[in-house]
Image 1 (cartoon, helix red, strand yellow):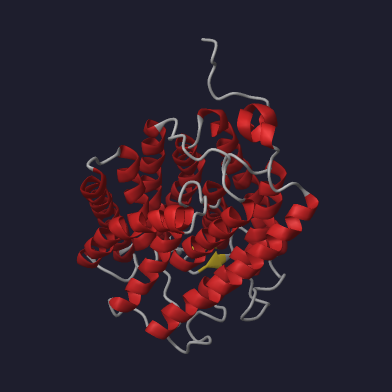
Image 2 (cartoon, rainbow, N blue to C red):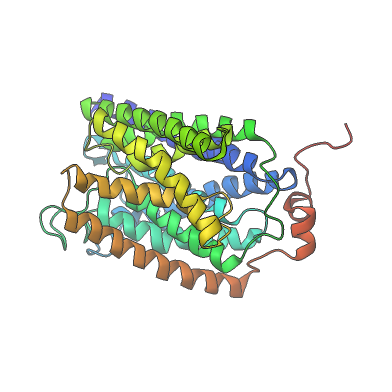
Length: 393
């Protein structure tokens, strides 16, 4: 065990959990109507709890077990069987590696929340998210990070898929699942109401930005120069994408908005995620500059071209950003074109198939969508019996 590595990953684990609670909750919560903000908080919080338990029981073993195959890790580490405080994973206590990866298993299904806010059944959220994490996310983790079929020595030969912190594993899977779920669910009854609290969106985005240092820097799994470089390029990409998003918005619409600028931040962060361990500051500047414009145009395509109500633009920002960053690894010569494109295609098809099956299965067990009265009045009061704001004061 290395003490410095262990100390850093303890901090990184806290930072990645901070991304979901409260970062993502505030980012998404501010974007919805006032009568639905608590439902968003509830979704993010409940998902964090459910994924933590499921990752402990089944998920970690599926992703990082050693008794399985190229497709899954086996059942040998269910309930962390055989893992003690003295067990090691590289230079880290294995229980710490488990905890660090658990925070990724929390935020990935939580990202999907943005696609279905203001109209989905709470029971469906919990059932779908849990099954999706175990049957879609965890296997993909094994394929790429757990020594499975897409890793080095797998189906693409010695040079496997390069995905440093989750461009494919996190952002492509969550983005495609969000897009498909939004399509099946259908649009909201009223899509014209603007975000109720842009200031909350900014606070949430700022928390995500800070937490992303743990997300990408921690993925080095060591306290060394590689972690420092990953952190640095993450920041440069985020800052650059924020500026290009705002500039493009100013050129197109005459005004640069706060919500737009901070959405550009997230686009830059998602785009640098897969490449953050393989590129330098100049490449990060290029990735961020393109991401701010590319993801903004993707928003327009999904909303106005495809007419899909991916409410908070999960696919356009996270999906497109993660896919773009994954491709840029090959562009900059840090990975093979065959592995990067092949990995995207295999995971993409797998994600869409599993997600569609789970949507249909879960809808048979618990309602997919709330009734029209609940949607009109807001999920906060009708589903959870609370209001975010005291309207009488």
